[in-house]
Image 1 (cartoon, rainbow, N blue to C red):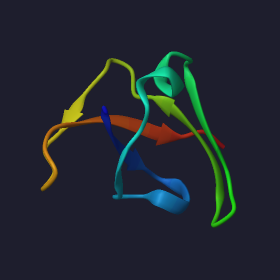
Image 2 (image 1 turned 120 degrees about the vertical axis):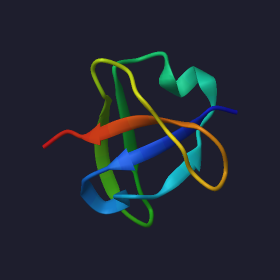
Image 3 (image 1 turned 45 degrees about the vertical axis):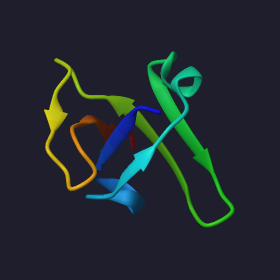
Image 4 (image 1 turned 90 degrees about the vertical axis):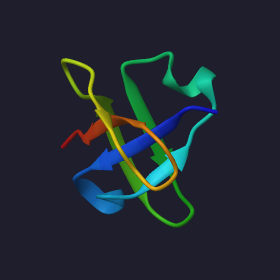
Length: 62
């Protein structure tokens, strides 16, 4: 599963494994139950080194 690094918003600085089919869109929507948020792919695409490995950076969309 691809790794996503969150920039801004409720998950700032956290890394998550996200199923590839959820990354097919330009936006990534989290709808709870713990929190809500909408993230979009950083342009131009960028990777961030994390303890879990390289992760694609997605930024909060406000």
